[in-house]
Image (cartoon, rainbow, N blue to C red; front, side, top):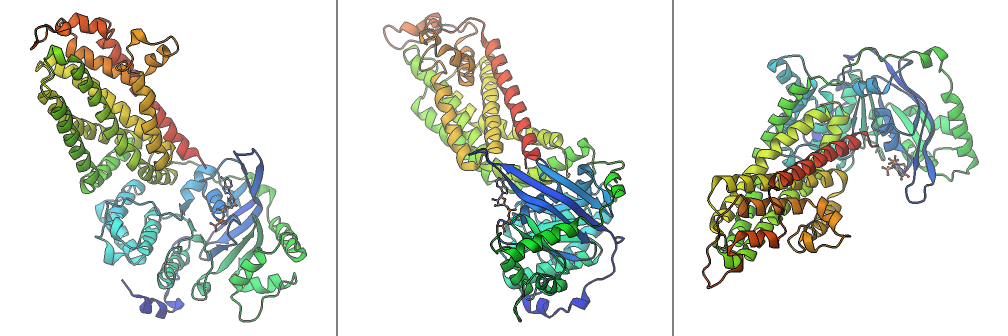
Length: 594
Ligand SMILES: Nc1ncnc2c1ncn2[C@@H]1O[C@H](COP(=O)(O)OP(=O)(O)OP(=O)(O)O)[C@@H](O)[C@H]1O
């Protein structure tokens, strides 16, 4: 890859200037967006009646003070924010509906959301598989190589995304969007966090993409004197209102018309930021805003507002089955490569299994230690719960952010993603918990009968799946810190009403309903049935007298109804179904959420 000195020496004329997309214009009219504050139910308008035009082949810089609404504008134009938005989006004067805009416009957010266990080239490959339905292997390979060249990523093509620099990651996230060849690219602060050389290098690549005939608009915090010549047009925002939309070179004279005179030798964008930061009551600024608003009404025709270019629309490039196959391949690659979490889960399961076995060694057939053996069963459930929920809660928030972004950019459907997720999670759960299960079952001397092993394993599996789903639900709803906290809190009432601490028969009328919904109770009861039900013969008694030698006494003691294993399974299955549906709904809500 070129170093900084080379880049700075590249004259602008060397950029590719032949557009490969016919000329067009993206315009938006009267865009307003408001939010309702949840704390005091007040309402504020973030974007106020914004209009503007971005032309293909030109690089547009969106600037404004912090909080002016730059990111919000990109979110609205890209369709990422849809509720509480009014206004129109048009291509060449024809209205574009929401679905169509998703196809035309790609949006690269400020935070890079990439799969760190894939290499740069693999990231582009998987994106190509999702986005380019037609074309064989060679064609995709050629497109990827071309993109690696355009974005200056050839040197790190084989490097894991987790190991590349911030600038390379930003270029890769642009490349990933470029694969589908969007006509409009919106970039939110692509240069943030980069040094001046890397920022210029990136802007140079972006400029080249614009020159190929796309509309490219990017939020830039403060373009420096190197970057400024690359920016053809500016869109300046002040407190959610437009104060300029036009060629960079015409900004200073335009402001001067309103008595806002840019000092000589001043960077015009610095001055634009100063103007945008003026008191909103400043007469010159008010006049400028009014004039801009009046200008923005020009050019909109009734015909333009009524026509639509939606036409036939296919949201995804692949069928659901094809999406599922690519998702499974990607997840498997990432899981195998980033095996730390999986290995850690196995090691933790073995360690806890050994600890429980040491503490309750050989209790299984001893009538005198039957209460200890009951503790083995509940400890077993706790271990499964925490190891299953913890991995989901810790890992999922990051993964779900990537999923939301890819889903909003129409890579694949929620259905395909969710199915792939479930298919990958199940063997992980089975493998990690069966190691633990075998250790504890054998060393605590539980009965070696297939019926009991099978029924107990089934209870553990269903309980583990509930824990995993609960982890995914929390991970998709809450930030990591909160979900870890909530996952621990949930276990307190769930175990209190498990029937281990307070048997159902002793529970007060107030507590009973809670026991009937506690998934830990059904798992615990199912485990007791497996181990002590199904007409198990009397236990060994190493003492002179063991009260619980006769197992019916123990079953009465724990108020275990006869023949209830099936009900326990049904209850666990119902919990699983509810949680799986809840995870699906919460992911659906995440995609729709602004
Ligand atoms: N969902 C929301 N709820 C409440 N306020 C919001 C919401 N979204 C945006 N805002 C407010 O809208 C304003 C504009 O936010 P936005 O992120 O678009 O600003 P920006 O110009 O991109 O700022 P910066 O340069 O600091 O990133 C801010 O005052 C922000 O607090």
